[in-house]
Image (tube, one colour):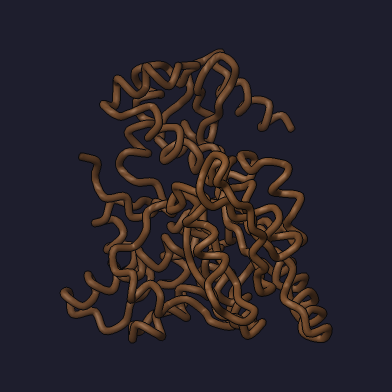
Length: 347
């Protein structure tokens, strides 16, 4: 059993009700993603002026950046009811048709992880998205009867962390496609201060920035760390959470200055001490760490690569010069990291 990962953006919060209370409900309250928000304001205003539903929207980007929150905001801004579901929830076309044909005047349907819909189920979506109808086949063989069921206009909002797995046919039917990026620490600090106000936490400016710096660029991780910092501050009698209090609490959680957790640091240290910084295959690393390859590839490596601490090459995984520096170690002479560091000094 793996340890709790406090900064894993893909991990859903256990206290869902509290997490829901921290979500903004209006586009003006949604922090960050400025270009996306500006474009959506135009699309919303145009659709409302014409008296139409908003065109179908595809939101894609890493987990924890607010795709579900943004979907709920879009429905609220358009005055639509919203039905929340996910791709893996549909095992056959009948279940999808039941959701699409629910009686409601102009509503939004949000499908999370939409890339996990089966191809057969996708076929039912195409006429629904284009012509507001679904095809029903009742009975089998010579008794089979074919019906077209007309639907009320709706907005389909799809969200995915893996846009490359969405079929071109489905992707082409979304009129609005938005990519969400990781947040800089300054914008995350704004989110942390807003959440602190809702939770009743007295949070200093430097305390909010310290939590933001260690949140891997994702609001979900930032809110999770804030709640745990609040717990430590409450038990320790801290009336105000400043940088020192936040640092002490996060260190007790094992989250370092870059947002790395124990498994992340063990990964880097294993590469450095056992394999001289690489190149090394992921299977060797998995055996050395006692973890699954999928865990390393999907949970550990993305942030380490994004932070410039390691890289994937055709020969295997390698530590970068920054990765060696973060560990407080010197790269071996003649290694790729040492060569890169030397070139950086010359430049």
